[in-house]
Length: 368
Image 1: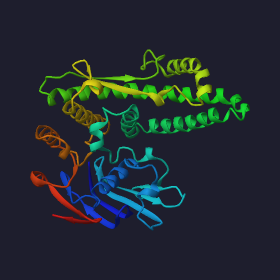
Image 2: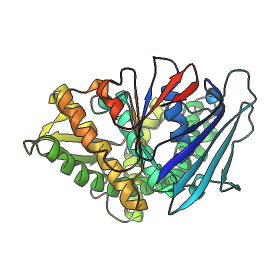
Image 3: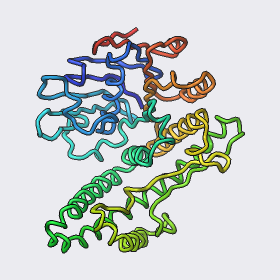
Image 4: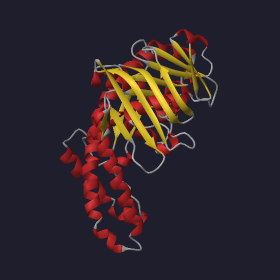
């Protein structure tokens, strides 16, 4: 699997550019604020239809343009394919195409160009709040399981509506009559999310532990524990059982939710904890241990995606190597021997011998 060419029009600071890539390592160099991360964002978006930097398509469209375009020629699933996205500055919904045919859902492009992104913020994911860890898990699951993406979108929609009811019920008590309906639907979809997450984190734990064992020279035992609402005794239970667990938890918090006017319980509060040799990494882990564990998670993600599609997903490293010491740099570089890789950096140094060098200068591309 590899991205052969990428065409951009009115995307971020790129007016109109066509870039050809090497099937191995592509080193993207240039000064700060020239468009290196923008290029990675376009590659990531082409594969999964989402940005890792923003939620609105308007933010990705070049200044003054009515629309932007991202398209690419891909060799995937043992054949040549094309992917194309049109993004509009107005409220008009985006358009997506696979092999020239217009598609209605991201499920129809899943697996054509999956990618794993690793950026400096990921090195802090294990030290920050639960929201960042949920985003990490959700972003991977949305690529692996398109049905999960649809369920997550539905859950967030219901959650937003329920929170609006809770906020407005003081002025309009009649709204409480429809609250049970929203609670039931929230528990139904929430149970599905928990079921997906439990199985995903189980696989992620196994692979990350293997990578971390190599990374630490066998000196540290890596463990990951998925944490959801307290009434869920077994997250691997049937979805119907999980739904009943969520309903019980919701009933116990009913009064508190009405008083605080916010939804206090559900999988939107989920988290996971990491331990090294039984010690909580978030609380007691050193900076080096945290970075090592974060890298192990990303490499595990790549392996799970390879198993799913039978091909190694693209690996996007956005200025990550400069944040690592030489030993960790070497470990990461030793893991990228197979598959297509994109690395951004300001000072390439010894990395220039890895593969093709692409220089970015104010949204213009030069290749060597």
